[in-house]
Length: 101
Image (cartoon, rainbow, N blue to C red; front, side, top):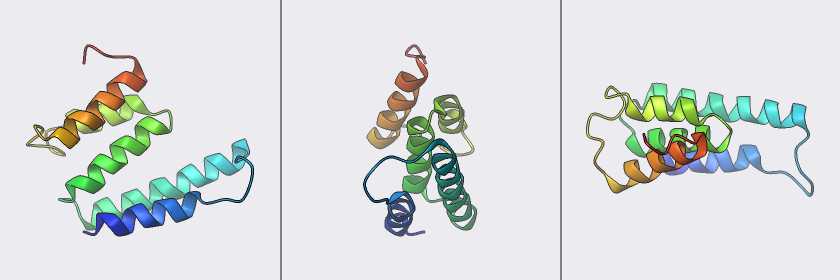
């Protein structure tokens, strides 16, 4: 799978002119981006960079607990020793307040 293309699609989905998203618009954008991730991960289940991007997205959108569970699932990350993995897990743990892990 092409994680670069996924990054581009997510960036484009989140583009906006001046000002911030209103609550309803932000919720709709989050759902749109979630759907982009789900389609990509279904099509490319072995795309580790995309999985890490998904976990990071979850953390940055107030769903750090989901990110942590996704990251700790051995089905998603059988080899969870990479520096990128550790960095994204640290973000999820820090965001959720569970620093002990």
